[in-house]
View 1 (cartoon, one colour):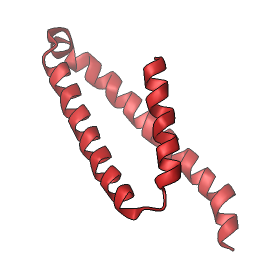
View 2: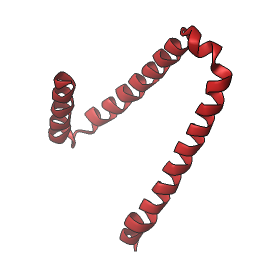
View 3: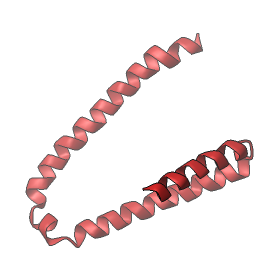
View 4: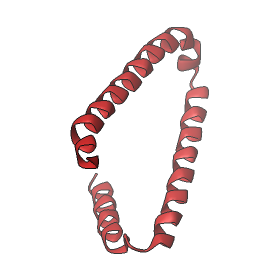
Length: 92
């Protein structure tokens, strides 16, 4: 856990000092997108290889769908309120 915190804090510090270099920002955006895609693929690989999850996919699928719809709905609703009450006032 300490190692993860050190990496996070060093990344924040590096980002602070390098924030004005557009080449680095574009590069890190591409690397981050690639890393997220790779992690999602590996997560799918792990789920697909787990017999317990595959055998329970019907039951888990309904629960996952309900949780996903709830999470998306909550995120959209909260984002709307943040936009209306925080950012909209700054546009005027």
